[in-house]
Image 1 (cartoon, helix red, strand yellow):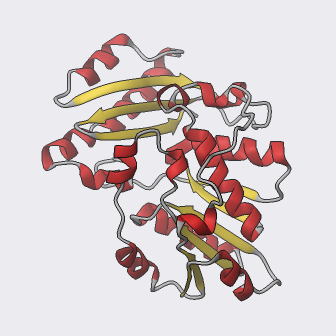
Image 2 (cartoon, helix red, strand yellow):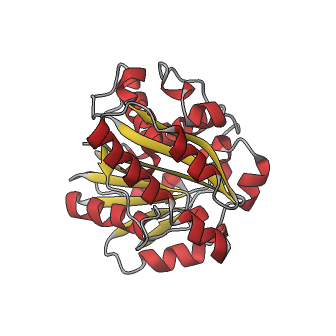
Image 3 (cartoon, rainbow, N blue to C red):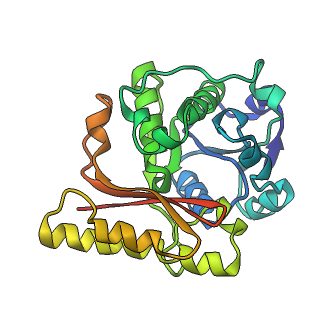
Length: 273
């Protein structure tokens, strides 16, 4: 494993032959991230893992401040992977000016996460575009837990003509079905038990969809979630993101959810077919 804080020094170390894969992360690595790394290593000759908490995608300064960081622990988790390149930049190595670009995502940034996190996706796209243009990877790997973000990146790549394959990877879950997330460690034991029920609501809604052909989540299910202790629902919807972006291939309907359990925000989704 080779670790670089300078993109220029990292570029000097890259072999110009063969496929390059990249796994962009914000650190606090868990098994979900590691599954992306394994897939990238299986499909490419060289793999870069970036670890950078990107300030421009945070709407809330307190959320940025509280985001978990432990670079030593992250590097320890990556140490067993052979021939891995890790990029751990400072803000100055990434940004000359700490601002995000304004992108055209059609209507994709106006729904769900876009409603609750203004300009979040501009910040995400800004850092991902920078990383893509720095290292010119052939393949980039993202988890489906952040499915709208994944769709945003696919839209950006298509609209800007960036030559990279954006590869969707299955959500990795805890034993009780909760999608793995860096923020999960913020929860108390009681909150964690409540959070474990979120995926069960998704599965229940999927069964109702299959049996009754519903096109929106029943009010009774929304009430059931809101009645959970320390749980506040933001959205729980059936949608198809391809209708919001002309750059996306139709991947079918999904059920999406976002809620707060205590002070931890949880997002998740499952495919309906």
